[in-house]
Image (cartoon, rainbow, N blue to C red; front, top):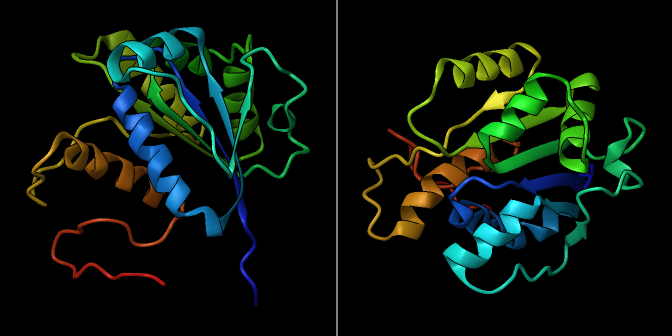
Length: 195
């Protein structure tokens, strides 16, 4: 039986940590054989932070297709679409709060709302510290609604030697949660390379 290629959404919001999104996009490019399309949405602040932290602009390549943040005609703005997973990386506390409150005032929050109501996979990657009680309650609400909170907290048991390798310990986990293969180091397991 042939595997169906995936359609996922990646939203980048205005939290510091554009490097997490950059590494995630590099990994998704390597997984393009498993993907039909990756819908990409940037918040206004995310574009500014990307420029400030990484220099330059995001350059989409197949299978990425960029949508404007207010484009409610994007397919994943509707539950009738075939997009099955959404990753918000990094996820600002403002975006988290809107998702937890059911506020759909742009394409990012509308797509997240669709994922939750359709019981599809929503993975939020908050990058902030410390968390206030409001942040934690919003995470609790999203979790109870079916979302997954995967904070941008690197692990170190794989002994990363660069910032990118440390970041990849988070993005590997995110992609694993999204259902992609055996990526990266796993405690007590041999790494299995897939063809």
